[in-house]
Image 1 (tube, helix red, strand yellow):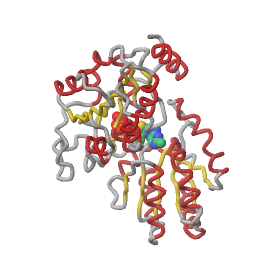
Image 2 (cartoon, helix red, strand yellow; image 1 turned 180 degrees about the vertical axis):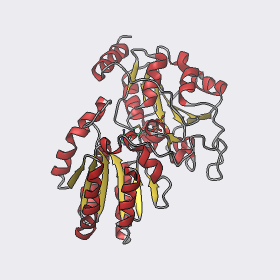
Image 3 (tube, rainbow, N blue to C red; image 1 turned 45 degrees about the vertical axis):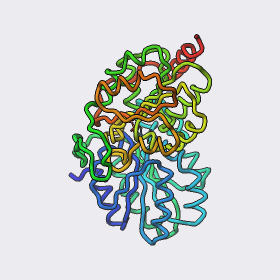
Image 4 (cartoon, helix red, strand yellow; image 1 turned 180 degrees about the horizontal axis):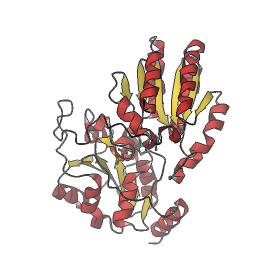
Length: 374
Ligand SMILES: Cc1ncc(C[n+]2csc(CCOP(=O)(O)OP(=O)(O)O)c2C)c(N)n1
């Protein structure tokens, strides 16, 4: 029997979609491993960027489609209205509708619940794809989107992908560790994120730590929970901005554990950091060249983009690139004044740790207590 992933891609091919753009969701990782092998696939750094690229594709007479998670709609809405809708450019959206079916992450609920209301308020029509048989609705709906030059969203329940064997990933989990010709200054990675956190856990002790969403927070909780850790549970791209905000309110050292995918979603924050120049702020960018939490899909940091140069270019003076144990520890214990950007080149891969057992209210309360207590 055909998998739902293959069926959906077959429909897109039949309807003449030329480019598939996307930013992954954990609940569509099987689909993303198939998409990654397609010629017209464009991996995005931010969902909003996909709206602009799609507008250009449609202006050029070709057909785009974007795959995203419901949270990503929050990043796109202005461009969807003032660009795609305003100029009447056709755009089908395929949204992994989180928070409605067997949801383990509470932070997915607010956007998941608001999604239909947001689309309605924006005048964007939607069809719900609740189970595999509903995929035929896409077949019937796509021609109308291009005929009428409208935006339309297909809301895909995580249930659609359930019960099927996941296709094996197109991208090798063990990617070449040596730098490619496009990014010759990428260092050789030695460790996965979990091992790096293990290496530095004593150096985080007693510090204010802001941790990136998804598996990084779970790994940190598992290895070295303390009240002064703030675990993000959603809001991708906000770790470094949160750390910046906190650093303005305290003299204590603030360490952000961020990821390459999240930094690429919101790199402009590095310019704001350079502008404000908080001396107590350190960004630990664990660059595993992938969206680890959603299945290790490659990011551009693993191939063409050097985040050290990005940080320098945005005006941060104190930047180091490290990957070996001694280098990582020395960078973190150096007495140099911040803001510091410690770029750790890492291997892709996650430790299978359980979800964080404390609630978001508890995370906030104990973090504030720890932050304000000294
Ligand atoms: C706006 C938005 N888009 C997509 C996601 C799905 N998502 C959650 S974590 C993540 C990957 C984060 O990658 P990175 O920052 O590199 O950290 P890593 O897990 O690799 O350490 C993605 C794509 C999301 N939560 N929010």
